[in-house]
Image 1: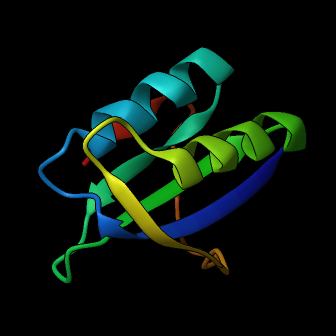
Image 2: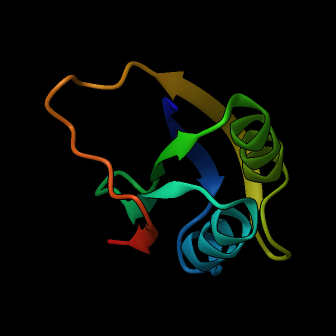
Image 3: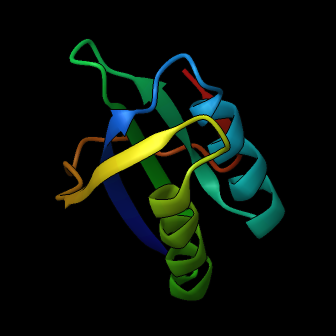
Length: 90
């Protein structure tokens, strides 16, 4: 199992972005979470097989209708971060 963490920048709050990520992650059988951050970005943390995480990353770059993804940054995952087995929205 691999864990990845991304921050999505652009028009990603108030457009159903977290729900879009949840549906994609559930479809791919991934654990983790998506949450809005105070600076207008969305943080996504997910764990699972590399192939499924690659597919999730492609979906993050696309986003749902009404969103606009300007940048997708992959970040280090802090060792103390607990990633749930199912996917949730925070």
